[in-house]
Length: 449
Image (cartoon, rainbow, N blue to C red):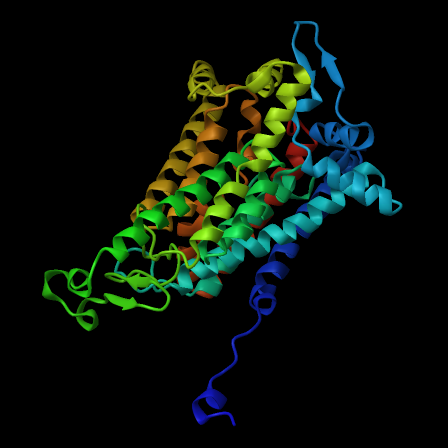
């Protein structure tokens, strides 16, 4: 028999049904971008499809897929551009699709990006919905926001970024973001083995896979500490200042080993936990350790393989990157580049725009910290942003290198979710149009290196 309460309770929609509006909205924004690119390119007698699949890094990925590693270009200034700089997961998928079907490697790369961008949109929606639906209202910090609406606008904002057209190119950004988003979702929901496996795959996709590994490890380590503290406390310590669980929102679930303190959300690393402590201990230490062990294997394995192939050991991959004049200098080269823009006009306008952009990124991150976003999101977004801004070369690539840093969009998504529907629709529609126009202009001009 089914009791009356169970029969009366409405069924929760499936994950795909909940994400469907966000996925449809994402597809619409990207379709607008592709249509605008096609029209713009045709007017300039260029092929939009070639711009998406057979230019810049797309050619390097397709070449690896077709012939493996070993190709390099020696420039007149002595620099050596080696294909070892490109991580292998996207070329592997291109080779696989081309092997089982009629697609060329370029076609396969485009197909992977389209599918991965939808998977990334779904992952972003899942993360944001989870964060806000598990949050208790705390005045002034963005809580009380409907998770589904916040997830919808996070996806739309990600689709409508100025360089959002890269999500539809035969590049690795969409694939990486999909793996990163779902790995973070697994961390947030306590699926440690899944989180580690996805972090491993992300580490085989781009160097910034380090950010996903850092997020998994940070969350796991803090969970160890939190679990130890929980086991060492009795109920009297949990009721600090003499407040009972019902009075201050502190409760304990002995079966799950989780707790809620001062509005913290239940479950691993909920939205109302502080940036430094998770909201609960993990359910399985063994799975958590296994996830931690899996997470770095992808990036570490490829870096070690490159070192062995080049004969330079642990520093082999860094020597490859140096051949591209790329490295990590703490942002010194980027700061010099921005300062140089300010010495003349109209380049000074671009310099001011760069300063404003960096300021916006810092502000969004600070807001995320103040709103107490889950620890894994803060670690991940912080590492992605730091690696993008502090790279010493390819300054024009920095916007697309920041594409995976979707947690920075959470404060804006929450604000749009709380606003009136007409206002939110107007803002996202305008952003989508600007993104479509800029993407078409960008790819028909300098484009990504």
